[in-house]
Image 1: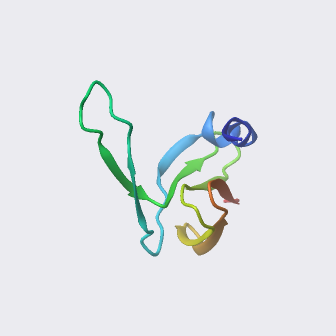
Image 2: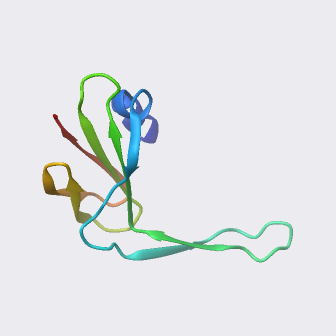
Length: 103
């Protein structure tokens, strides 16, 4: 699924230019994950946002894409800040979404 999504969006994710992190109007819930222990060491616990994202610009064509990944167990709708003002993106649980804007 990840490979297919990346391939379908390769004009941005492989050949485009990373513009930065996705700016969301509201903070997302913070999730935590504890890794499996290795070599008898205490496993680290990592905290991260339920929805992660980035903004990419197409190398040729002038479009901008806003990508979001939902790593939580429930559907999420986020308001993202775009060059044209706030927009909503709905991302299903454990899935990806994109919003493409023409310049």
